[in-house]
Image 1: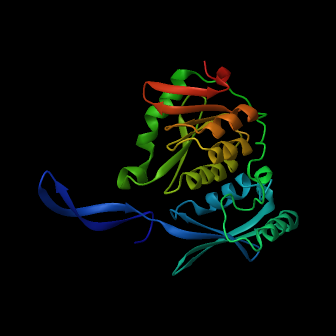
Image 2: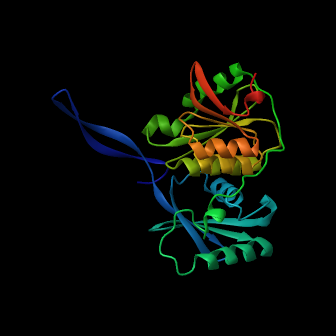
Image 3: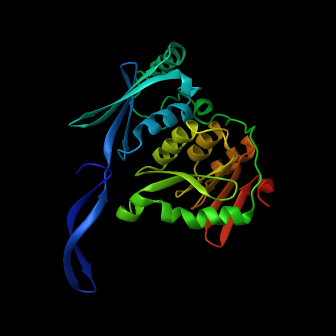
Length: 262
């Protein structure tokens, strides 16, 4: 199976009847991020927009503090998956090596790179950007998202993350089998755009990591189709991020900093 999706044969049982046919299936492959020759992490991901993913992941995970620190990204396909060979500047590479030394000798990894609760649950970035949008604009984006998810329409198996204007127009969409990957791809793509006001809409739940990644990009509003977690709400409140859950046509629920929506 190659590309973002592939075709497979399947058998459907429906009310006692069996039918044969073809399904479009989302591609999932191992993607290794390698920094200056040192392998850091392997993610299971959809092999699309991987350079956006590499940049977005590097920024949202704090490996890089600026896109300028990423000098090159080469995509290398192997029989076992895809390697993203990133060349980064000396300062972030030194910090990455120190982080990796902290992992030495440990056999399990929940929040990788963290040795303690203090390191695992860190204070999120504080939002300095601001915006004001209407409930109508938010609903416009919610209603439009499904039509913009081409891979989801084909396979029914991927998450989406969308960059939306303050008028509710969807400007960019990135998709992946992993919700964090979809958001990282979007953050990488946004970083390459001219600065503009907007917000992020995701098809997943709003977890701690999704809030932290959005806040790290100084984006003031995150809307999710599903529910937020308790820690996500706490972090959004602390960071000054507007958090919206249960974003459905005709209804959305505001959990933190609702003053931005009017």
